[in-house]
Amino acid sequence: MHVYLDNNATTMVDPAVAEAMIPFFSEIYGNPNSLHRYGTASHPAITKAINQMYKAINASDNDDIIFTSCATESNNWVLKSVWVDKILNGDKNHIVTTEVEHPSVLSTCKFLEEQGVKVTYLPVNDQGVVEAHTLRSFITEKTALVSVMWANNETGMIFPIKEIGQICKERGVLFHTDGVQAVGKIPVDMQEVHVDFMSMSAHKFHGPKGIGALYIRNSEALTPLLHGGEHMGGRRSGTLNVPYIVGMGKAIELATENIEEKMGSIRAKRDRLEDALLAELEDVMVVGNRENRTPNTILISIRGVEGEGMLWDLNNALIGASTGSACASEDLEANTVMLAIGADHELAHTGIRLSLSRFTTDEEIDYVIEKFKSAVKRLRAISSSYAKVQPTAGGEATACGIHHKKF
Ligand code: 7TS
Image (cartoon, rainbow, N blue to C red; front, side, top):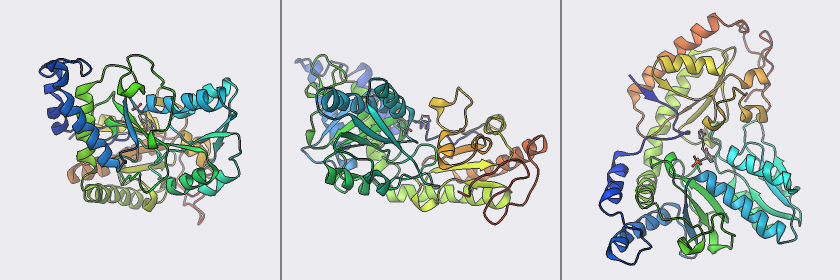
C-alpha cells in the first residue's frame, strides 16, 4: 500500500481539476490579451475561475483577487510593496509578524531588516498560537503592516485572525494573512474578518503547483512586484497562465463546496489516527489542541526517535510524511515551530507531521497506525538516548535528557 500523508507540503491534483485544465494547453491556447478570436476564446473560462475564487472566500465586488505564480510570490509582493509604499515613500518603519511564519514571510522580513526596516516577531503560546492581545503593545504609529498566518503549516494551529484583524482596523494598520493552510481546510469568509491582503496557493487544495493568488480588500493600492505589460489591470504583469487559472478556480470550488462535510470526514480519520498513536505508543505527544487545529494535521513528537530516522522507516513502508516544512528540510534542523513553542532542541528533532487529504482512506489509516508503531519500536530499540520512563504528571520526563513542556 502507498500512503501519502504530506498534504500540507502539496496535494495530488484532483483528476477533475486536471481534466478542466487540459483544453487550455493545446486547443484554447491564445494569449488572452490578444484581440483575435484565439485570444478571446479563453475569456469565459478565466471569468469563471475568477468567480469561483470570489465565491470560495466570499470576497466582495470591490475586492481584487490577483493570480500570482505561488504563495511565495504573494507573500513577497505584500511585504516588499508595503515597504516601498509605506516605508521608503512614507513615514513608517515597522512591520509585525510572528516567529512561526512560513520561510517566504520570514526570509522576506530578514531581507527587509537588512534594508533598515524594524521587524517584530510575535511569540506563540504553548499551543503554538499567537494570542491576539500580544499584538496590541507592539503596534506603534510607525507600524506599516501586520502579517500573521491564518493556520500554521507544521502544527495546523489556527490563529485568531478575526481578533487580530479587528485590532489592526482599530489602529489603522494594514493586515496581511498567509491563508495558504486555511483556504480549503476551514471556512474562510472575507466578510467575517478584517483582512486587507490574503495569500493563497492552489497546490494546497488539489490544484496545480505554480499558481497562487493574492486577495486585496477594497482594491487597496499596492505597488506591483512584477512590472510589465499591464496584465490584470496592471497589478501583476506576465501573460495569464490560463490552464492553471482554470485549475485553481476548479480546485477551490471543489475544496470549499460542502467544506464542513468534507472536513468532517477528514477529521474523523485524523482523530482516529491520532487517538491510536497516543493510546498505543508511550512517550509521544501531539502539538496543539484539536479543536483549534486544521482537521487534517498532526504534529507528533516521539521521544527518543529522530524525525529523520522515522521518515526513513515510514518511507520504506511507502508512507510519505514530513519532519516539518519541505522548504526547510534539506538542512536537518530542528523543527522551528516546536522550538518557538518552547521544546528543547532534542525534542524539536523528534517531530513528525502527518497531513491527510480528502483522498486519504480508512484502510490507509489502519496501515499507517501499524507501520508507525513498528517503526517507533524498531528505532527506540536502537536509540542510545531513549530510556523508557513514565512521564510525570506535568508531562515532563528527564531520564533520556529531554526536558519538555507539556503541549
Ligand atoms: N505559506 C505557507 C503557510 C505554506 O505552508 C507554504 C508551503 C507556502 C506559503 C508557500 O507556498 P507556495 O505556493 O509558494 O509553494 N508550505 C510547505 C510546507 O509546509 N511544506 O512544504 C511546503
